[in-house]
Image 1 (spheres, rainbow, N blue to C red):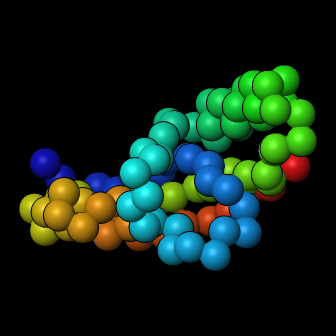
Image 2 (image 1 turned 90 degrees about the horizontal axis):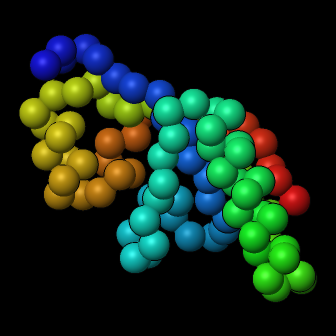
Length: 97
């Protein structure tokens, strides 16, 4: 396992949330290999919510994350402290209204 290898993934979450982004809420984060895959999943979620609940859609943010380099310590942090401990950088790349 390379000590210098980090990865870029994409995900989404509710926009303008006052909570810590990586706080464990019991609702799992879903991660994607590329931006297009994440964007399509988010648009599909929006279509599903709008067709079922009409007015209950909250803006969601499309996010790009880079992980810490893979190491024994970073894997332990991920396992023991959750995803937030494994995120090196985080960027909101779009808001879907």
